[in-house]
Image (cartoon, rainbow, N blue to C red; front, top):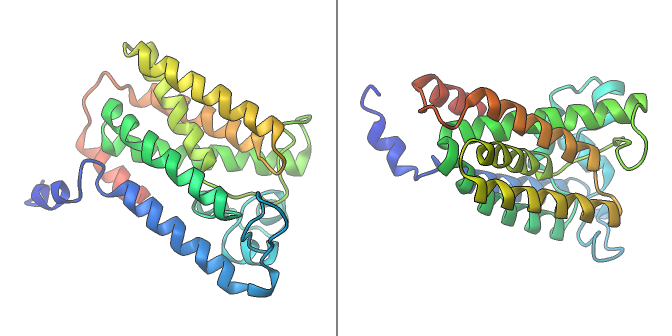
Length: 229
């Protein structure tokens, strides 16, 4: 490790990733509010302290409009760090705090970070594509503008479901239960990007099969995770 092992250990079990996500998402949420304070919405509980669409687009929201009409392809990475309201960010950060360490316990920290990043890409790419080309019916029609950490959260659930097939059936069954409950919740509530959830789950499950929790982590996994961060 060229002498850096001690430094990495001091970052914690998850290399400080959970705290990075929580503080990073919090700072970016405040930034979206500050960009267009006159556009902050307060119409209902789900839209409590919701930033305007203008500020979301400026700071990196994804969807059919930014990706395919504005050419901002990189938003499939940035969208997972942005949130559309106070309750939105609170609930998503609670799930990250619960699922990221659980995934790291099965795959190791580096592979957890890779899973989180890849599932963000697959989730928002699928939602943006479906929103632009309309190849899915309701409730998977995709979005014109979409944000939130729920796509990689579903990716972590997909990875935990796969780990259940590799031996830890209790964790896999619980992850399935969480995924089903959250998906049904998305059908009931408005303004939920179910297509991004599906893409995130599929991406997390698929990359987890390739990373294989039964094999030990490698040094290149650590390098890839640091690049993701």
